[in-house]
Amino acid sequence: MNSLLSLYQDIILDHNRSPRNFGSLKHATHEAQGFNPLCGDKVHVYVEVEGNRIREIAFEGSGCAISTASSSLMTESLKGKTLDEALSFFESLRHFLTQPPDTPPPAGLDLGKLAALGGVRQYPTRVKCATLGWHTLQAALKPSGLPVTTEHDSHA
Amino acid sequence: MAIPLFSPKNPVSLAGRIRVLRDDFPVLREQIHGKPLVYFDNAATTQKPRPVIRVMSEYFEKQNANVHRGVHFLSELSTTLYEEARKTVADFLHASSPAEIIFTRGTTESINLIAQVLGQSLIQPGDEIILSELEHHSNIVPWQLLCERTGAQLRVIPILENGDLDYEAGMRLFGPKTRILALAHVSNALGTVNPLTSWIRRAHECGALVLIDGAQAIPHLPVDVADLDCDFYVFSGHKLYGPTGIGVLYGKSSWLERLPPWQGGGDMITSVTFQKTLYAAPPQRFEAGTPPIAQAIGIAEAIRYLKSVGYTDIQDQENRVADHALRRLREIPRIRLIGEPRERAAIVSFVLEGIHPHDVGTVLDQQGVAVRAGHHCAMPLMEHYRVPATVRASFAFYNTENEVDIMIEALEKAVELFGR
Image (cartoon, rainbow over all chains, first blue to last red; front, side, top):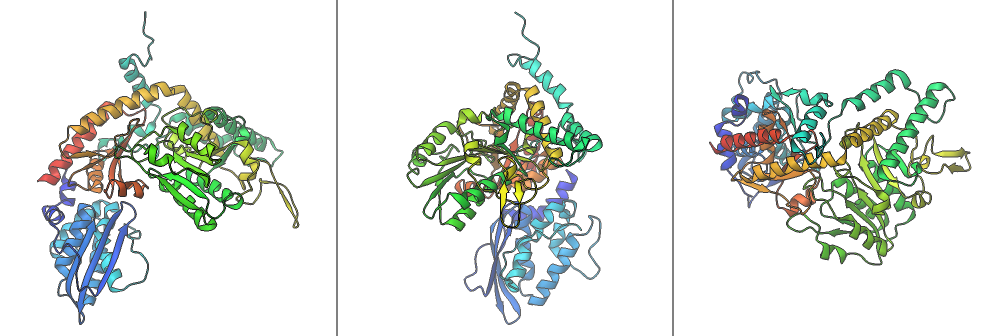
């Protein structure tokens, strides 16, 4: 049960039950859809960028507790951030989530509430759930024209 | 009168027999996260009994050579073993000759083969291909590709809320344009057993060909292709207690003889010049290249094993386990069973309200219980039930009611964990 409790921490269950910034954005300047082919999770991320900053961010879709909570936490943590800050934060988070379970976050990286996602490091197949919303955000901000999947995220 | 020791009328003796049979499957003794493995993902792949593992290692250790080419001892031996395997499969299905059995990589390849060669030879723009809402993606996508190539159209037999085919609506789809009916024998997601006879008869009345996807049927029920009168029947070795990498395509010889090859290469020709190549007769015409020899020997052994267990006991045990699972699942307040078909084959699909199947799957895994959580490669079906995914417990004869109780306890843990 212990590793399950570290995966499903209270904050994860809370954001799963009541996801923040859930819905679409009327004035979105960027948006993308993401898809986890393993389990059928779908997420649609909307971003309203003003200047170089994320003014509003929201998401909708259906997914497991980890994917829903991670997207919800993402919207909370990125509001007001510059695009560069947002994308480099995702890089750091992804690096953190694909490290062996006991690796501490790198010095200088403040994950805040997102540290709660660290439980997925014991569940390699669930890393993709935790990064789906983020990959989708990245696609919204840097569109490649390809559908987003999470097929490349797992322990090396 | 004495009841025979292993009679299905004697539930105690059946339980005893199952205990003994479980010893044939080494993997069932494994511990997962410190808990005994409860393997309920049999619709994805079944575990392998010792006799299958043994014949395959013996083949590699003592018999390995390529087939259909050498004059040397081992090549002749391998050829004999490979062709005997084909005969074992033919007898198992009640095919009229071994030439009606083509070995492929799996169910998916068998369906793709047929879709390809029919596309080259038979299908015209405006023709119609009928399949059902229950199909696995492998019995949808090859036909869609065929439609794209030829201008044919897909028609879909809808299902009723309980997961049975909608007979009335489905029958209305048939007409003079119907060329192919491609239908699952058993649904991989819901366990629905389709009543094939009336559908096959209707298709034939329209002059259409019938392909039956038997991947989920063959482990659970006896199949007689002569009796079914289908034109093609396909399944995979690994869902039948055999190895991966091998599948079967049964085809009526009257059809196979008329169809063009699909892959070119060695083994499928009678003569090759740069001007003209003459193709071999079936089954060789459809088996270009070195075939899966060890796997063919493995699937034949799996069939012998399955016959020795016997479908009577297989069905008795699987029904007991599935009935127990349905009864216990209904006791969980937040459960929704997906599909309650009239006839079910050892597969139970459900969702727990408020908990995503993927999360349920992780909690069960921590208790050693292996289930499938996902869309089961049947996204149109998930759409029908308006769920993104389900939890699927699929049983084999080696599963027990006690294992079901372990799954139920784990589900109760999930409810507790997510309800806190």
